[in-house]
Amino acid sequence: MVCLMTIASTNAQNVQYYNTKHEVGITVGSGSVTQIFSGLADFMTIPISALVTSTISLGSYTGHYSYGDESYFPAITAEYYYHVNELIGLGGFLAFNGMSRDMYVEGTNNYTGVKSKWKTGEASRYNFSLIPTAKFDWLRKKNFGMYSKVGVGVSFMFEHQKDELDSNSSAKATDETDTTIIPNLQCSLLGLEGGSEAIRGFVELGFGEQGIMLAGVKYKF
Image 1 (cartoon, helix red, strand yellow):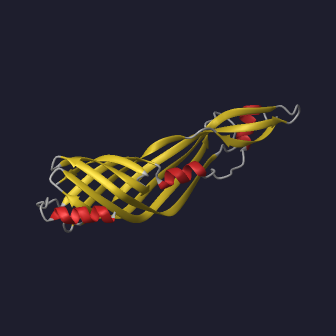
Image 2 (tube, helix red, strand yellow):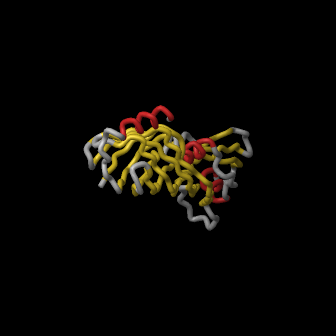
């Protein structure tokens, strides 16, 4: 980072400042904080309802829920920055990602001891984040730029577990929700952007809610 700042400072004397005040962008990333948390954390423990056991086994089984493999929705963000001077841009981003898993009941027959497994529904987590961010442009040229950025904000993690059962029973099926609020951040150690003066593609390497690696497109005006 010190080397990059030195290079940027040296070149700035010979490069005319590209006078951009606003930029908006869309990114797709992998390995965001909430994605990793969702993959590692267990879903909240819930009891199997009377409707579930009566529907799938006529009450002859007792069991527990288990979950299948994860299916992920990528980390997508929309960001905006206002450049207060040649070096610093202030703004932030809104982020979304999610994951889902099939829900199963693993039961044991109360009479024979035989174990069985049924798919009964779906469990999901959807994560929304708001991260105010500062962007530092170490190198600004007409068609190329290098930068870093850092931000701190908050994420809302919504969990939902629901049985997909059809029954005339008056018993309540499983339909549970839970919300977790956590502090969150983004630290992009190195960002590279290139293209025309107005439209550029970019990639970033770092860690946080936008991901460990991310790519996107931005419009500068």
